[in-house]
Each structure stands twice: as C-alpha cells, then as structure tokens.
Image (cartoon, rainbow, N blue to C red; front, side, top):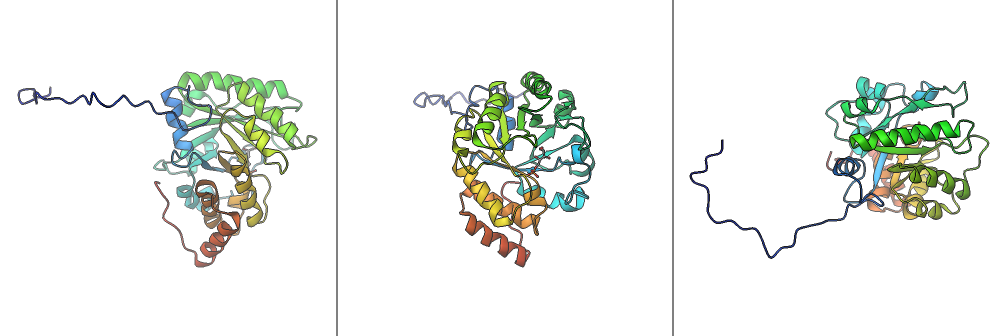
Length: 301
Ligand code: R5P
C-alpha cells in the first residue's frame, strides 16, 4: 500500500494542453486495436514508417536452401540489422536467440513441397502458438489464379479472424504461379483481394511498369518481395524504386542472404529503405563494408 501521509496537495492537470490524439503512422491501420498497432510498430520502424524484413522461411516448401543451411551461422549475424524476421516456428525455436528484439512474422501456411502443387496449402500454425512465440504477424500465401485459389483465400480469412481476436497482424503474400505474369494488372488484383479480405500487410513482387498503381491500390502497408538473386546494385535499385513508388519497405531473402556479403547487403538495403539513399550510393556503402569488413552499429537493436 502506498504511503499517502506525505502526498502533495498540489496537482497539475495541464488544463491548457489538449489531450494528445496522435494518428497511427501506418497507412490504413488507424482503426486497428492497440495490440495490432503495437505489433505493427515492431515490424515497421515508426521513425521511417518502413521495414527491412528478412525472409528466411524458404525451407517450408523447398527444403534446404542455399544460404540457409546453417541459420545459426549465416543468419544470426544479420538479425541486428533487420527490423523484422519472416520465418517458420521451427527455425525460430531452434536457431534464433530469444533475446532478439525484431518483429517476428511467422509462416502460417504450408503443406505441399516443391514436388507437388504449391497452391494446395492449408493453415499450418495455430494462432495460440503464434502468441506464445510473441509473433507480431503471421504470413499466409494467397494464390490468386492458382489451382487452389479459394482454399488459399480461406486460409487468409481464417487467419485474419484469429489474428483480430488475438491482436496479431496477418501478412498476405501474393504467390504468383509459374503460368501467371507478374505485371501491374495481375499484382493489383492479387494485392487488392488480400487487403479487401482483411490482411493487415500485403507482400508482392516489384514490376517495372505500373508498380505505383499496385501500391496505390493497396489500402494497407505493401512490402516488396525480393525474388530470385540479382546482382547487388540491381537489387538495391529495385528496392529503391519500390519504396519511391509507394512500398512501405521490403521483405527480402535471397538477395540478402545469398549476397557475396550478406551483412553488408542488409545494411545497404536499410540505407535505401529507411534513409532514402540512392541505390548507387548504397552500393558504394555495400562495397566499403564488404572490403573493410566493417560493421555499422545497428540502431535501436
Ligand atoms: C514466399 O513464397 C516465401 O515467403 C519465400 O520463402 C520468401 O518470401 C522468398 O523471399 P525471396 O524471394 O526474397 O528470397
């Protein structure tokens, strides 16, 4: 019980200062509950409004992946430079230190391997386990135009219901089948469906023509998928273009962990995403870090 004998009589209620009512910093997220907003603030940096999410969930359908053979050796050194990690619960529990402060985005759909029809996914994670793992979001593939399109969309909507109940965000990942074209028309369709059906974040590929219309048609934060490994300068240009054209950051895997210097590359991507550094300058920064093996002190991690 607090000692009230010496309690000061004078109180200051700052009657001249109106109560603060700050708008939440992320697009389309102002009406979300406190818990989801707080979790989104651990994925997206509130200073820049952007994220560098490191995707390392590839093993869930394609097995051992170049660069991810030893997450403890190859990936843990990158963790301080990522805002968020997108991964499976198996890798999180087995290989990522629980002292990490990154936003955790857990893979929540799965089923088929690369040997089968990839769109035939089910929900592969209970929201209760996501909460137990302190996840900020769960990620689900949505195969618009794919053989199991409806099933994958139901996976999304069921996770959105569970996520809203528990205060966990849902990242809808637009998975583009091999026979579909990754152009603005298709991406607008896929992105819009994810957001309309309740995804709190949407992930999609960059397209050189019309990406700004894809971003504009997405009412919630859109993050750019990395895709196959490119030369570092090209990957930095793609990230810069996506952010300049409306993306709220990137969710990149192979273009970071398959780089000649992953620790330098993730920092260069961070410069482009958070500081708006020109890709050519970020590439010079990458080269310097790579050759000097210098490691910048991570900010806020
Ligand atoms: C999407 O299909 C999965 O989340 C991938 O494992 C991941 O997003 C791929 O990342 P990236 O294409 O940048 O290597």
